[in-house]
Length: 514
Image 1 (tube, rainbow, N blue to C red):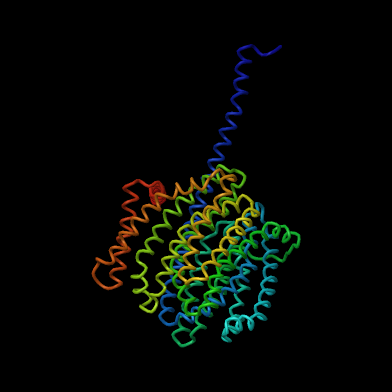
Image 2 (spheres, rainbow, N blue to C red):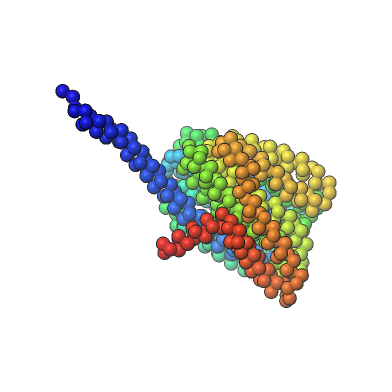
């Protein structure tokens, strides 16, 4: 006999309701997972930004003290050497650490294999630089470069280890340990370099700072981070990681080589002093980008990667990242543009005022980095390193054409063309994400325009204040900074800018929990 009709209907209803219950459970699990990821991202951003602000802030103070003790020409000589060291470092580090983060199931064997492979690669690159040092010195007609190259190249070994350590940190979101290690390394290396400069070591003070920073950071990371290399190495695992990482490595080499072409050209065609002036002007806006932009970049890749199969969620995270980073980075860069001459006079002295034009141009160039960084990290996170490489090739072909044109004119024109090409690159980087994520360049610019408009208004008002404010450069600088923060914050509150409301509510919630 079958069930009575009423009972049967009830049974059918019960059966029909079960999928709904399961759907509710699935949705609940999704929301819980999203909450956990957001919590990890916020916590990671807090420690990563703290690390960058703390480290870069200390390095900023140290660089000011060193600038008063050393000359632009000495900075330029080290700048030439660091171009070659940086290229070698990219070969040792880039691509492999990103691949470790992006890979869904990276384990102990993966990390240890990349660790040993990186050390072997560092030894090969050190040998190449050691024997190339005399040729580099002849090219720049300065024999002092030979020992500097050979000594500075030692940073390749701790740099290789650090790249694996920081990949583990990013993977596990253990940014608190990285914060402690970085601050320790900055303090020790800064103290050593200031002592060396003060006691007459000259250019070797900068060399000592670089070496001690890398060594101390590596040692401290072994102390603060839970990962240790195991006695295991798999060539097969390295090859698998290389299958993804080689494209990022080539892209990073192209990008690094291109970005340093300006330094190579200035050091060769012009002189070391001009290179030192350009590097000093570039340092200040890069400090802001490295603090906020790089912190957001380091946290976003593992966060994006955890959702790489869900385009809608990645798009939402990318949009939030572009809005938030632009809201924070743009006012700092445009504010720096406004106070450039006052700040350089107050912090570095009159001999460095020649770097102000370069500083202002680079403020404009770096203002596009929030879009650059976020779009490229999204492309990496969804596993499209082939697209990443193609973008780098396209941008560098365009950039070299601009370089060929700019080199015929003055250094200022050359750097201005670089800023214009950085603007063009925002469109190139954003183009693939219209298809990959459904987030077009038009939508991206629409998201950053409120922050851009408020930053421009604030910049104009703060720049005009320097002609009306009384007192010396220090007093003017402090008043301009306070006025800029007040104007930008007030306008964001008045016009109810979405990013301002979002960050205000986020901070309020976090403070309320405490």
